[in-house]
Image (cartoon, rainbow, N blue to C red; front, side, top):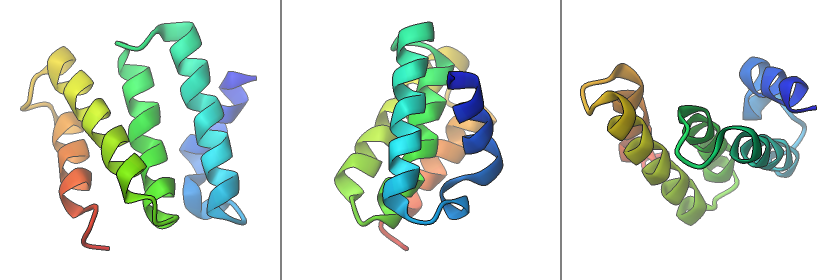
Length: 100
């Protein structure tokens, strides 16, 4: 159930799982669910990608993490403007991606 997956993601984040691979699997199910229920231009789909980027980053997959952050930033900034707090937070995560 996509609602259960979203609750798990929001409460636990990648740190709450035993391994990043498990977290990635859950995030990918959430991304797929958001895509199927809301479409690829929805803010929910964008946020699911932004949230998944942390698990990919922690797993050393910077290419996927960066692509997800880029997609999320573009969609959120198109929907709400570049001055939006969520867009700024995603941009900040993107900027700090390689710092960790």
